[in-house]
Length: 164
Figure (cartoon, rainbow, N blue to C red):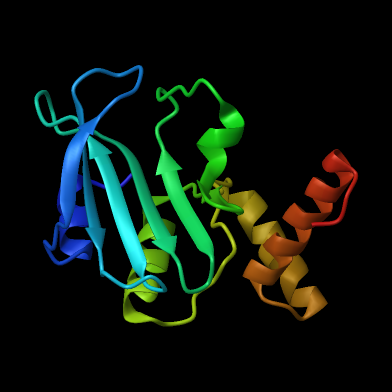
């Protein structure tokens, strides 16, 4: 999760609205930064302003490309999971795993640049496993990242029974 400070810097301290945010966690507040264009973007953050300024949710909506990304704290519970996943109309949120991925996507959206739509997943491997995978990638004449993507895609296909 990113911090309130990181979010404020990301939006260049431009807040367009704020309000109480009601959920199963009391005393939360929401801030929004919208660039004012229907085919533009908006960023939202939900945090606790009273206790420790803990961030519970960050969202970035890319209206031009019809995409929405978020990082949501698991303690936030919704009554209707289908509505909870919907950003607007037919657009669902893509849940991200890292603050770094969120910031990269948000910066590109704000700048009007193309960005990687894939979700970055942190993988922590022991050194010996990493070395073995690097050797395998070298033997296959592909990058380590490509090798990892291939392995993860194959495993997801095996477990889920469908191609990703």
